Image (tube, rainbow, N blue to C red; front, side, top):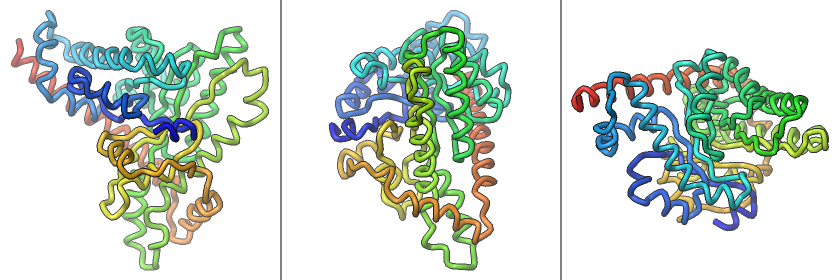
Length: 359
């Protein structure tokens, strides 16, 4: 794991629950090399189904507002996790040791509501190592620029396309520049851009398998190719003279975070989306089973910049089969927001039933 740090990639855990906090499992995972945590509505839907939260629910005097109860439960998890991660945050001077909490996915297309909720959650938690997750919808990207300007640390989620990622970069940099123009510090502002991987192959492989022509050479290739091109854009932007200039007043690089990196296709290596995407200033957030697999048989080599020309060629070949990757990534964004919204609604419904039992 020390080699990963030398290369410049961090490994984060894509899971959070009261169980792993209170059992000491989270601390054990940090000892093994995990340096951050991501969460999402689907993760909390599963977590809140357990009985680990019953005591806190019992102690809540007013159970009439389900959303407020949800907020109290989740914010405690985030706060406790942030405290456990704080030594890593301090040791890395704020480059690692973060935990993420997502705004309600029900407001994914509402810029004003996203800004208000993100600021509220960030101020409520009041921890230097908390990131507020905002989806990379058009409305979310507008919110991101304003939130960065106002000093909120942001994890931009549900990025599927390179064009979408460029817009996210611009939002971050514009927010930083606005702070500088107003004479505000920027060296403590932190953001990551979460670029989703496996869902790309799941969608495109289905289409490729239905083509009459031989498409076997592209199966399982597009998600990694898409990520490599995104990293090339990252490198161009954050290594540029403009970003590195004194005018940026020590602004931090917005790190690329690879999300959805567990292999969904049983025919692929369990580490296909880990071993191929290792590079400087990157993060890979993964479920525990993938992390354990990486410890067991992963290869810690700098791979992200290898095969860039082939990656571009693979993406260009999609048009030969009438596949428009932008249409697919746009749909994945819409589907991603919808999936998280459904999980969030289900979570609240399940919690409402539990509160009814506890009243």
